[in-house]
Length: 333
Image 1 (cartoon, rainbow, N blue to C red):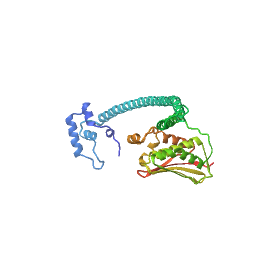
Image 2 (image 1 turned 60 degrees about the vertical axis):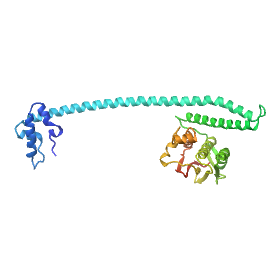
Image 3 (image 1 turned 120 degrees about the vertical axis):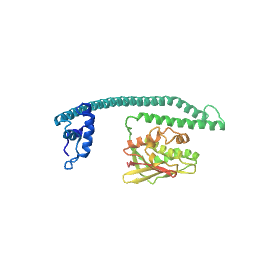
Image 4 (image 1 turned 180 degrees about the horizontal axis):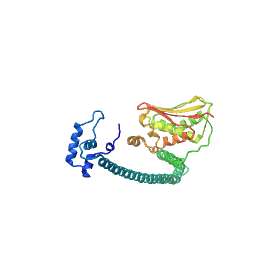
């Protein structure tokens, strides 16, 4: 199609009337002529052609009017583009300022949590130490009921200590990678130690705790303290979300040059669409879970960070109402 200037110009007739080059009556007559006097061999008859054919306006005057309107439209477009670019720049600068503020707020939050965590350590140390002295009856004899009450307080202090250590680990690794000192660690030994640590917790919750570790003579390259923390947390988490008479099993298996660790449970399960959310720090799947099961929602986030520092990742599979499985693999020593 041959492009005519008037194709690019909207509402040409109104513009010509506004400029007093034609009258409103001329326009209406030309529109009627345009509908009845088309050019079959060339297609549609344009309004300008109809006006020229009717002798209402000569071609030079029409072209001048169209050119003038195009220039006006071009100037308007250029101004609009300039305004748009200015708006984009202003919004970009505003967004950058907002991001800077968020980054500063995040740093303040991390500093606050870190300071509070360290400040809580000292009084908790004194509480735990004195509880131990009283329970050991180093400060005098206590009766059975007192001993039970103090044992409950001691377990609560230990739980609080674990939460504080989790916060300290989280804040210390929030903006930088976790560095580990690696060594060869026997697979079954570290698994047995983790189960021993949580056997009493499982018994109180009525959950069966099992170990399936056929790799008796195999070691992995790891940081023993961090790996033990991850295994214990995954087991503790599984116990927490498993109903009475359910089971939690720690399994290991060999896969070539790797050992796969898996913690399987028969608990409540996790919806597939929530797999990504559970690794977010300070996150619970919903408020009901938070109220029922407690916790800060830091454990899985820290576990993933520790396993990522080993050069691998944690995988999860689950079915709601049937249980979950968290697994990762480590290089053999």
